[in-house]
Length: 91
Image (cartoon, rainbow, N blue to C red; front, side, top):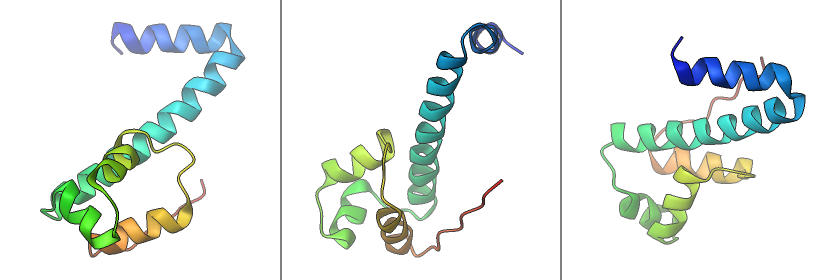
């Protein structure tokens, strides 16, 4: 565990509010990263995905970098634009 991980764990133990906010933000960040990785694996640019979804490149960038409150239908459409399927798991 590096220093950053230690700091985060310490802050989470000291502040349940921090823990909740951090975990929520991390999950949103992770969704954007997964979407970006899937796009890159598909060999597509943000502009190409935007064209397939009939939107602007800036909208794709916003989805990948700030995936907060993203609609399920948007995730499904994004996956379909990459030629993939969305798989959700409740754990």
